[in-house]
Image 1 (cartoon, rainbow, N blue to C red):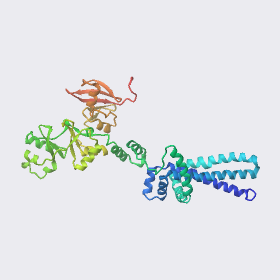
Image 2: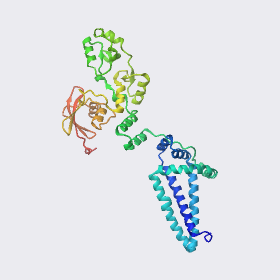
Image 3: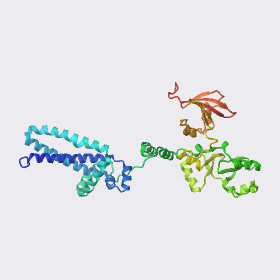
Length: 425
């Protein structure tokens, strides 16, 4: 053959085979490196290369069979061609040298370089390759089918079953990682909102409710003047109405219903006619479930009750939405009341404040598992109500008790967090 075909033509054919080998090697890596979710998104947008690539990857055994068939065919043909060229140039001694040089060239130019390029830019390589592989698979299907039949038969003996390759669903934590890694592709505020939505299943109504002792409502046992004052001072559009205490709730009043009433018509009897039935939910209900229940029942406020039916607090639709988007309504008079800065290294904090809200507003990291307030957290750790001046450390934050009532801690002083854990931890 070497005598009939010019040596230059043999080298040209060898170069072509090496290029084909590089194509098969690089395209295989590119197709297998594609992000399946980005691929599906592009395919649904109508990108032809992405659509064909997704279809090919639906049956990876066929795609791999086609690539290996083509890659091995060109590599074996190139090896045979090198042998012929070497014999023409230097006889049998040149064959060994030619084989070594050929192996090095294949490793560098037909394997390592194209695979590295494909791994760095999978879409640029995979989409054009899919346009080639799709019709090529149709042409060579009988041969690929026979090859896969033998290969799948071997896998079957080892208990491996092949079939349609579906994208596996992401877990919540995996999806959190995807959102975190999105970087500049998702604006910071939207990334925070997405993460908050993913965390709704972990947060319960107990974490965001207004606790029992802080509920503002209308006591029907009060005088008319006292009731009118509560209505005029209220910052809320819906108020619970009860007798004597919140556990004796009789309904919920929407203040908008008072708009058409004259002042002289406002009395306890009229108020009771405007009430709607109270909506009760058990403590421990995840916010994700409660949000759905609010939507289904067309409610905006619910009473959180314990296993004995005692009211523990009130949760509103606004409370849940603020868990997603952050605070969007703030009473200027109350803003900053829970935390007062005493300089650059300490804060005076209301110990009855909600831990989750403090962590969010001050970028602190107090534990949220267990007690919902700093008072509860401190009492749980010390197993007693501490005296003023007591000092302790929680999660690296130095804390000094500054004011105590008979049955709870009122205010504390929080210092700058210690990065180094205390000795003995």
